Image (cartoon, rainbow, N blue to C red; front, side, top):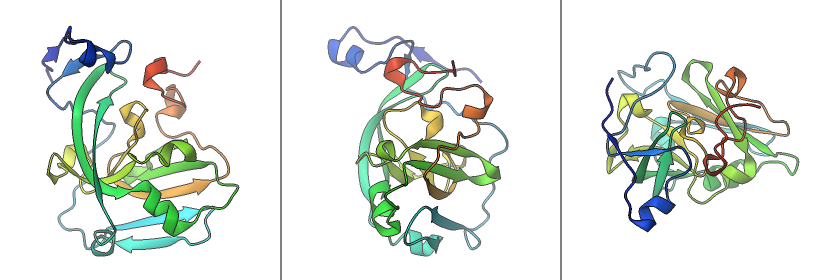
Length: 200
């Protein structure tokens, strides 16, 4: 796969938005581990909110689509050093999921569970950012399979691997549970402004 890289503009506003070590691209590179899940239909798809919560729940696709949605526009930054600005996503605010599930006072972390046993983890405080979404749409259209159809997490402020594709559930936890990439040498915190790419 060949990417067409674009150097950051000299414009001060654009430059301010590019974290250390990143370069701009207008394309949307596709990077993931393993195969892309195939959904001939969504009849068997479900979504779970569980763990240290007062009200765990499971929804099928039709029920999930009845949840309130919002649209956010934000910049995304991949650990492989590409950045894409002003990406627009539509989905269910994570804050709404938390409001319904009611995490316990001891819950401090969120683990995103995706197809194939893939997980990614963030502090609950990070997931409660108003821009954190469970997104089903990108740029006004349903997600493409390579980008996480039918649902993916969008986690602001962290390298893009934290935004798990092919999402099937969120777990609220008292303990941190490092995800797939964190167990394979990547930073647990993944703050791109601090260039936290890899574990110490």
